[in-house]
Amino acid sequence: MSNDLNSPLSGRVTSNFGGVGRHKSKIIFGTALIALVPMMLSTFAASVTVGSGNLEFGQGSQQAIACDENVFVAIGEEWHGSPTAQDSSAGFFRVRTLTVSNLDVESCAGKRLRVRLVDGTSNELQIGSAAGATVIQVSIPQSAPASNVTDSAQLGLSYLSGTGQLISGVMAATAVLNVSGTSVYDGSALSPQSADVTFYVDPSAAQVNIDGQMVRRATVETVSASNSAQ
Image: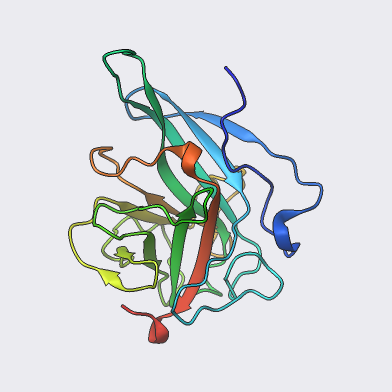
């Protein structure tokens, strides 16, 4: 199998602007529980995209997160069959999950956490089932949870437009906040100071199917709840 998947791979997000340094690209292979197909996990540095909202910038960091200056982004991909008359095996690796890892939920308590995907022409990819939904968002609890939060409604999961406007409608996605267990990024122990927030873009794979080869960058932002659109 060729390694040239045209995926947005690089090292961890640090204060080195532009993602330069001695970081090595890598792919971590796991086993998907859905459709018995392999899932590919890509890890890469987040780039900043600024909407019309009041963002809090992490000083010197690539991600717009003031409450935690060192987070990681991981994209989980799985094979999505799309056969044609000419090729019954045709398909692509769809984006299955987006994980913000190593997040300090104590420092980021009460913030809104937003994630976007950007293609090679700097356009934001539609990430939700509703038209114009290019941002997916959760609210970090006011107090660090003692156990994992698996209720998407409790996390305030929602879609937003690129400018931060709430998009109403049925969510195709789900989300979890894990403060115990092991990290998606590197297998380290999770805690309230090093948590994983995972967005399942569309568990059914029926409405949102993003070709992983289209993704070139991810953006991670925190927004103060008092200044956000929702």
